[in-house]
Length: 521
Image (cartoon, rainbow, N blue to C red; front, side):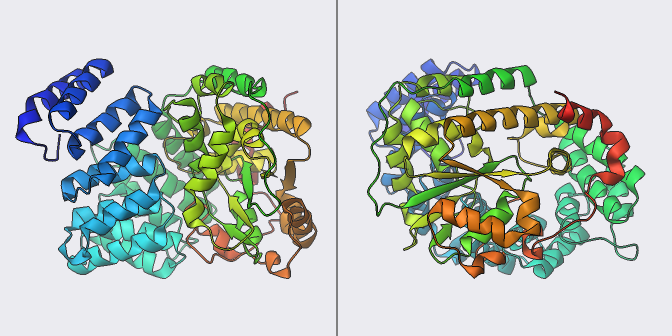
């Protein structure tokens, strides 16, 4: 335990930690409950209980204890550093913002605390707020590499690429061993024969003691730079190295994923349909699909409409389903949640979703939620939110899969580092979406990436009509009026790109097994 608690309950909290180390969640929770009985409302104990209930899969209690800790008014920085990610986990962002206010002014906050707050704000899709804390940290120490790299990342989200590049380069001059810097740097722009970092990356890959995480970062950076230079043989070898390093740290079972997708396709709620919303109710538009299929571009175009608010990638519906099923799981969904969803109050999930993100909304009638993996929630969304519309972004399967293969994601996309596993996942995604489209043809509109970039007006007219708004010419030009906290942060600001040759074409011979799998009957 890294934050203070009343001395009287130290033995009980220590016992809870010992039980937790043995994964005996019940005993650990009992010890913390006993401590809470001795010191009611102690925020340290409440945070510990929130963690333990999450580990035990008890979503509602975990969320409740986090909210109670936030309401305690605690202002100890060590405690709040633990509490902020708890609140974000449950999408309690307004409560998280209130806790951050207690830490102010920034001038009194040490650099590690400024970085921790900025990270949580960025994760909550608030890069415009995060940058202020990073600016303060940089002012306090202009040469601290972690600050410079964090700031470079957030500046990239904000489209301030030149400043981002300056910060990242400065960090690498001070600490050339930090692998993340090369990865951030590689994606900021196109490398040239006169200006690239290939040799520097190779030197760092040869540094003794590199962890798989570092090899993945450096390998993806090397692939990107070599690809820019047209050195495709070397670029492919770098990509293989990166993917193998990343995949070695992840647990993924394609057969288990297939079972999960089958359960989703068989989902039928036991509860009656949720009543239709009032005519003036806000319309949520979920933009779903495979990652790297063009969802960010579609959201940017749609968000140019004066009656549409683009909210970016949110996990609010996932949180609402976890609350409705009282189940905390890894990833967006698992088989237990699907089973419990059959008897859950989906109407309550829909109401929680709308209430939980109301603070993000303005006067617009329509808002978009662009989390690609919400395709897993489609069966729940159509029942929980009768007014919701779903835009399914589709792109050439090979282009989509190759774009996934060369992207370093978080831990969520464990399927994307092996070409065959990736192809199988794409096929399962397509089958599930065909199923939902057949079941709910009036709720799901398929948007084709190729048509979107080649005949933008025709495709956006279809999208506008489906979303219940009149077409507006502003929808023809993507524009990031806010931060773009996705892997497409750089590309989306380059405007609509029409490629005559697909990006994967120089790698066709190595991708042949993946392509064959994608095209199998």
